[in-house]
Length: 188
Image (cartoon, rainbow, N blue to C red; front, side):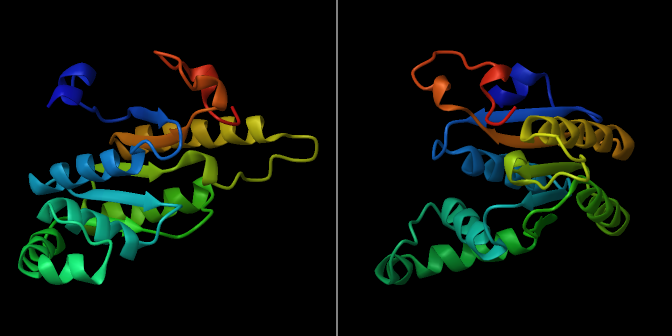
């Protein structure tokens, strides 16, 4: 709710960037946002370029059950809560695509298919620096490639008429800073 108030909601055509240093919980927060959106019946597409569907579902179910699943004993001790959480999660309109190194055109095609089949209204991309650029030509660099990917994601949000939450990593220079800024996005 606090994030919703700060952003004044996530609106159709918007591309929202969620950025932080590695291992600070970007994926966890994005999964939490996605799950909560799906719980109110809004279909969500989650493009996970880093983690497998199995890993993501494990994390989502663990979070929903409020039970760790790091060891076999964890699972054994919390089996009932985990089973109940899994049943709740499986019924949600949450669609995960874990295809690695997608290009923007491949993602767009998959998103259009999901929108036609499942009426998705929200997309998460985890995370932008793993996406593959498309034919930038000789002499182009990773910064130009990521700029093209970002433009493509924004265009996709507008074309599909839905918000896209894009996860990104920050440079080392962001460490210790109180307020990161766009210039600290890695490789951009």
